[in-house]
Amino acid sequence: MSSIATSGPSASGRPKAHRVCTGPRSSVTNDLSALDFECALTHSVNGVTAIQPGQITTSPHLGVSEAADHTGVSAHTLRYYERIGLLRVRRDASGHRLYGSHDIQRVMFITRLRQTDMPIREIQRYFALADAGPATEPERLELLTRHREAVRAKLQTLGSALEAIELKIDIYGGAGCPPASTS
Image (cartoon, rainbow, N blue to C red; front, side):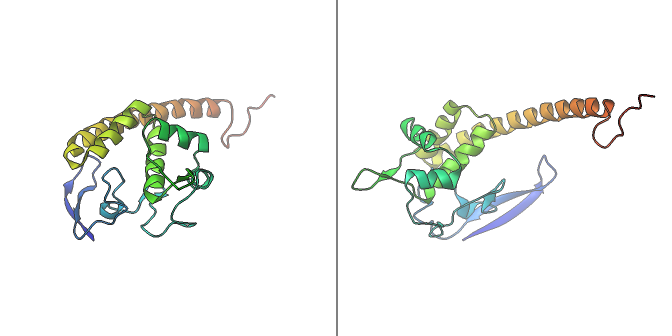
């Protein structure tokens, strides 16, 4: 169970929301390196919906190819993430990888961080801190806050670049403008 308390507006103008977790944590989110969707404000982040405990669409544990299909990340990349320590995937008696919901959630978050140009070393640092437990929350917050500011700066730069491109398109008669007359 969780509840949400709000306070004054944040820098974005929206009310600040604080998570308040009550009740026991599930075994899936008991590992602090997992995204804590049980105590998050929503069960999705930028269109990625969290897999709820016991709600995996195929089976409780996916093989590497199924995990690749489920996350949109190649099997090679999943193995790479394991090799560099971003994932610690269980294996069955035959040595085959078994990706659980925690692993899938972690891959989805890694994907979002990579899509926003966070370097692998910073992602490794984030998850090393997460694996170290709740005492590292301030450091994780600072790392993510810094990254958010870098993403915002990149968005502003991209917005300016898009405006310049749209201006050129308008000059050349594109975007719904009739072509320039040659007569």
